[in-house]
Structure formats: C-alpha cells, structure tokens
Length: 380
Length: 252
Ligand SMILES: Cc1cc2nc3c(=O)[nH]c(=O)nc-3n(C[C@H](O)[C@H](O)[C@H](O)COP(=O)(O)OP(=O)(O)OC[C@H]3O[C@@H](n4cnc5c(N)ncnc54)[C@H](O)[C@@H]3O)c2cc1C
View: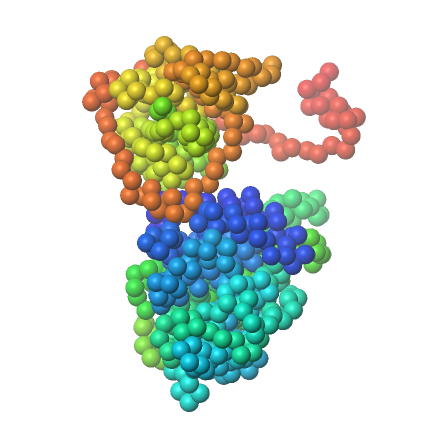
C-alpha cells in the first residue's frame, strides 16, 4: 500500500513493544492508577517520544504518518501509554516550531522522560471555549508573574515543566494570550490531588494553581500575544494522534472479540458461528479500517504541507465515535464477561469514552468540519 | 577483530504462506518479509561482543535482489557497523552451497575471524550454509550455539543437542551458528532506524567474487500439507483419552 518499508519497520517495532511490554501491564495499571515510569524509560530508550523532532534537535525526525502508526500500536497495548507519547509529541512540536535555542535544549530531557511535561490550557471557566481563560501573566521587571489555575491537566501530579496558556492582555481576546514554560517545582505552584477517572486511569490528571509564580523573561514561548495561535498550530498533529489512539483501542477490542468468538461455545457451537455475532465483528472491522484510513489521510495531509484542519477533525471525530461504539460491541460479544473487571474489553470501553472529549470535544470537531465546509465548499 | 553476520530476508514468521496455484512455489506477492529470526540472534551476539570491546567491527551481509537492502538497513539500525549486499537479479534461485561459496569468497577477501550465522533460515529450514562454509574455509565450527564466550583467541561455545548441552572450545577463526536461546535480540531505536537509511551499503556481485551461483538443486514442485481431517477434541481425563485413542484405532 502507501506505507513504505520504513513505516512498517517502525510500526512493527511499536507493535512488538506493545504486545510484549504494554498490553500485559495494562490491567494492573488501570487498577492501580499508576504512572508506569519503567515503561516510559524503555520507550525513551527506543526513541518513541518526540517522533517528529528533527535529527538536528536530537529526535528521530519521522513524519506524522509514522507518528500515527506508532500511536495506534501503543494504544492497542494501553491508551494511557499512547497518551503520554501524544503529550510529549505535542510539547515537542511546540518547542521545535516556536522555541528559542535555550528552550529547545529542554528537548533532550523531555524526550528522555527525565523531565515530565504538562500542557495546561483548560480552566474551570474555559473548556471548549479557550478564550475564557482567566490565568494571567503580568509583566514584572524583565520577567512575569503568573496567577490563576488549571484543571484536568494530564501529568499535573507528576510533571516537572508546565506549558501554560495565560492571558497577557485582557483586552485583546484571542490575541491577548501567551504560552509560558513554567517550572512546576517553583514557589507559588500548588498541585491538586490526582483525579480518579472512568478510563485511561494510568494517566495522572489533576489541577495546578499558580499564586504569584515568578517567571524569567526567557520563560515565554514564542511571541507575546501569539499563544492561542501557537496552541492551534499544533492541534492538527494532536488530533491525528488522538484519532490514532482511538483506532488502537478499537483494534484491541476487535482482536479480543474475535478471539472470544472463536472459543466461547453456546448451543454446541462457537458463538462466532452465529451470524448475529459475525455481523458485530464485521461492523467493528469495517469501521476501524475506515477510521484508520481517515487517520492516515489526515497525517499525510500534514506531511505534504496541505491544509489539514478538516481532515484532522474528521479523523478525530470519526475515530473517537467508532472507538466508543465498537468497544461497546466488543463488550456485547463477551456477554456478561465483558462487563466484569479483568476482561480487557471492559477496560477498553471505559478507555474509549474520553476520546470524544479531550483534544477538542467531538461537537467542537463537528463545528470545525462544518465551518470548513461553509468556507471552502463541499469539496474544499 | 572482524565478525561477519550473514542475514537472510525471509517471509515473516507471522505470515501464513500460501502455495501458488501452479505449484511452482510460495506466493510472495505482497507478503511481509523480515530478517531471518536466527540471523537476528547471531547479529545481536556479534553486537554484544563489540559492545564488550572484544570485537572491532560487525559486518552484516545479505544476498539477493535490491530488496534485501531493507534487511541490511534493519541490521544497521540494530547496530551493525557495515553492510555488504551481494546483488542477484530478481527471482534468481540460489542454494546453500552457492551461498556458502559467496561467503567463503567474502571472508577470504575481507579477512574475518568469526562468522556468526543463524542455525537455519525459517523459509527453507535447510540449515546447510554454516557447515558448508566451515568446510570450504576449513575452519572449526560450532552449530546450534546457546552460549558463546570469547576468550583471547579462542571461543567457548555451549551447543544444544538432542541429549543435552555440549561445551566446545574452538580456536579462531571459526564458524558459529546461533540457536534460539543464545540471546534475545534488542529492538532497534527510532533514531537508529532513521540513521540507517543514509548509511552506505557496499554492493558486490557473484561475478566479481568469481563464484558461479548456478543452482545444483532444482525445486520441482511445492504443495501444501494435507488439511488436517478433524479439529482437536478436549478430553476430561486420561481414561477418556485412552478411550478416544482406542476408538480412533490409534491404540490397541
Ligand atoms: C482525562 C482528561 C485529560 C485532560 N487533559 C488535559 C490536558 O492535559 N490539558 C488541558 O488543557 N486540558 C485537558 N483536559 C480538558 C479537556 O480538554 C476538556 O475537558 C475539553 O476541552 C472539554 O472542555 P469542558 O470539559 O470544559 O467541556 P465544555 O466545554 O463545558 O463542554 C460541555 C459540553 O458542551 C458541548 N459544547 C461546548 N461548546 C459547544 C459548541 N460551541 N457547540 C456544540 N457543543 C458545545 C461540548 O461538546 C460538551 O459536550 C482533559 C480532560 C480530561 C477528562
């Protein structure tokens, strides 16, 4: 197909790592809500963080399609692990595109997982509507003073470095926000408790509060007032990543359901011999393949330098929706067992749901798709 | 000290192969190919020797059409220092003796002290190349190695036999073939996979090496194994097992 042997080589590496290391650990990680630093250390050694970071900046320099292939495979093992990879990719992309030389020097420790990062946008009053943020950074001599609070931030309980969106001009709307690189061990930074979630429970999520946190002038990433745009500029890649993650969850569900259908017997035959069950499996397979193709198409839009906004939103929205619907089918194939803790599909169903919410809710994705349609027409 | 590791591009172990409709061979169209797993183990062992400082240079070598260069790149990504491709036109059949002769020529030309290869290739399962090469070179050999130690100028090799383990000592230069338990090959990292794309590969031909690769073996036909008549049944007890074996006529 359109995948090169290089793509396949990296995908196979991720697949093997996922089967051997991630998938066997997933159930316990879900149960214990534990941050699997031993898995992340191994991934860092394999170069699985910062996949798109150019070789000149210490990364392997792969394209977005490779990134999508890796995300699907990691997520097939366990979505929380893939989400860590996605988070690092997003931060790394920001640094590559907008960082100064000094800021880019942080990449080594970030890709090596010696520095854990957090991407801090959401606030109690600002979810889908990012423009509602109230966190402020005010000039203080040559530097800045940060005040405010963020919620539901992935890695907040464990992170060393926050990339924080804050208002630098109250009257300038979208043009009044900037991104700051914040040392989360600094005075004035307070962490809320770890949240207990429905799924992706090994991802540590919590709140961060900033009270008069002093930032040096060098803490600002990119230009003043461009924070919102910088955040938007990496969204395409972020969405491709989450879309691939959703496909990986659904694929794991299909694999489990297919296995079970071939072994579970009722009425003297395997349940896979019943057409009613076969149709569930067929629908899972076709939706997963359709989602995967949307993801690959969106990734290659990015790689070819095309406008990828609509393609990425379609991929994210569709993949997340089918991940929820088809892992529900996987539970159905398992019958009562599918509802019991310890069966993989029970976890997959819980892990899938957040895909419709984070990285822009699926309603917001539809808003974007529709806006692009209105702007550029039915074929635009 | 230089080590040569021949690596063969074979149908991936996970592929369920199909025989071509005309029975002339296996259908390779669109089939996933990988490095022979035993060669991967041999390569891993060679790289470990280099990492211990006992070996200076590990060369991976593959024989076949241009596509084998992908397998060589995988070897470079794992940690091979150099790669040699002996190029054959596409679809050229080659048998173990011809492979052994090509390796013999390369070893004599480039001066290797150790050839580490897989005990067999998982496509043909012949296992003939290593012993033939040792014969041509008149070097000592150890087959089916599950442990290998390099002590000054000789090797201590533990090999697996049907009746147990055997420890051999052999002087260098030597030929050693790797068995499954020798090691677990590493994953190649993403940066190394990327770097391997731009590493040079030395291309040679059988003619340059003065080797005639005309096969002495001809494959007449390939057929799939007969389908198993019945699927397995599960029995509850040893008594049931004996009863079913009697019913099948397998026990009197
Ligand atoms: C596990 C987890 C991890 C997260 N990680 C991070 C992180 O690392 N960093 C970070 O900054 N944030 C993170 N978030 C926050 C996440 O991005 C937000 O929850 C998400 O953007 C939605 O915002 P909200 O929850 O405030 O929902 P709201 O925006 O309040 O939305 C509520 C509902 O209204 C709908 N809605 C809102 N606006 C519209 C509209 N215009 N048209 C139609 N429908 C609309 C939404 O689709 C949704 O159904 C995380 C959240 C979770 C649960």
